[in-house]
Amino acid sequence: MSFDIVIIGAGPVGLCFARSLAGSGLRMALVERQPEPALAEPADDGREIAITRHSQRLMQELGLWARLHEDEIGTLRDAMVLDGDHRGRLIFSHDEAGTSQLGWLLPNHAIRRAAYAEVMELPEVERITGTRVKTLRTVGDGVEVELDTSEILHARLVVAADSRFSDTRRAMGIAADMHDFGKTMLVLRMRHGVSHGQVAWEWFGHGQTLALLPLHDPHTSSVVLTLRPQAMQALLALGDAALEADIARRFQHRLGGMQVAGPRCAYPLVGVYARRFVAERFALIGDAAVGMHPVTAHGLNFGLLGQSTLARELLEAVAAGQPISSPACLRRYERKHRLATRPLYLATQMLAGLYTDDRPPARILRKLALGAGARLKPFRKVVLAGLAAERTDTSPLFRPGHATG
Image 1 (cartoon, rainbow, N blue to C red):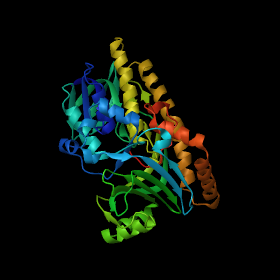
Image 2 (image 1 turned 90 degrees about the horizontal axis):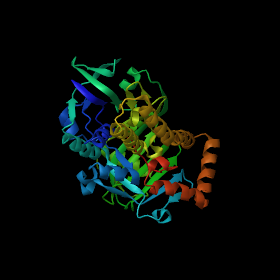
Image 3 (image 1 turned 120 degrees about the horizontal axis):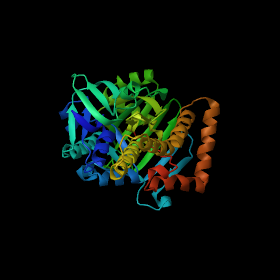
Image 4 (image 1 turned 45 degrees about the horizontal axis):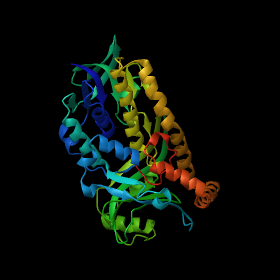
């Protein structure tokens, strides 16, 4: 079975990459370990994804936005950062940004459903589901992809979008810098008595980090709690009533009573940055290339940006009659995506370290930083310009909130 491109991983980024190449004349195979029904109707994994204006525009262009249900689209009007019991706060306002809102919040499973529905309609994409990649071999003028069914796919180019723990990346000999933060993140939708007012919270407390992401219903939010694994295990063992009381206490009852309104989903916090994004006839996109800590809410936004950048390079190569797997084409993608992601990745690592360090010097430093940010209007304008930008790759962005992609 011969293809121009074999895409490994049918998450949102892999699916959007296939959709971005629709009509190009390129024949693609999409390989995914999950069975077809799990892709057509993904299970609710609890995650809400913060979407920037640039990402929202891409989703519109690819047809995903029109497939979302109205009650799946939450509005992020303003954002607020707090530190411990300190009364000061840093506000990022839509008014100061000169826009009606800072972004949107979407359920991850809804994005996956919409993306898969778009790809299902593409005749140039063959979906190969319920199977894993066994080996990859660069041979002659292409790549052989052997599946665990012993079937062999031949491709001119392989693109991996198979998570931040990518087996394909390792198989191609690409190392990655990984940082395990030693924390576990709980995501859980909850109803609450006080309206969220379409404001996202990031609240750094002693021994914990809390985030509140406003959903479509003014009295329902996604609560994100980060704790050390042992403390998280104890929390997850609670019944609903005890958990509701515990979360309300952690929010100091600012939202009134709180009730569980979705599944409990816990994830380890690990940041990943591949040392290379390309190899011979091979490219990484999505979390396989850059797996962000959620504090800047840029996981899927960078994933959408990366797939768009690579697709654009490949389309230009096709239009110019050049090989899609040429080293020059792949290097251009790598250079652009590294420039777009590396500075924020490093800044995020530093930010996450500062705001999850409970030692007294770090606590003093972040209170000073929060106060300075609240007083310095130029700083807020830089951040807000990034939030409102149409192009994420040119935005010096710090986004309070949470996202995983």
